[in-house]
Length: 217
Image (cartoon, rainbow, N blue to C red):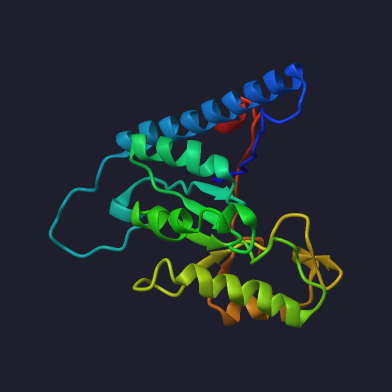
């Protein structure tokens, strides 16, 4: 399940009406997150465990659950640290944060993203270094590879496999990732990345303003 994060700034020189609108949108975003986490908790609490037989068995989901939900937050917004992480902690959930280590919102909170978030049991995914795409293969290798190296420092003892999302709306060699040359996909494979935009990983995007019925459809 993909949760697209947005940052809403109610300060600065914005008008009073704009500040109220931003505050309402932020509150709605928080409610949506809480609702998703609550629904997930209700679902998994009802699925139960498979009977213990003492014999090894291959099951589709961990502990033979009926399904699995993956919570994903993109773009390392400050609102993720201030709002999302506390909510996840309250309900005992873990999530994947797709980060771009070259962006200011990561570098300014580097210790939080690189140490505290992984220590809490969350995972970091590769959203490229600067979330800016690349004009050629050389730049693509740097954008993808450097982000991989920085993120792996947060999980030094775990599997080298890492989820990867190329960055929404950005171009790679003049076209969007989904239509990019095969050589760009080879770069992701070289760094042992699991490409979430390869067409094999369906997701449900939820932003501020998403309707409750979208969660249950």
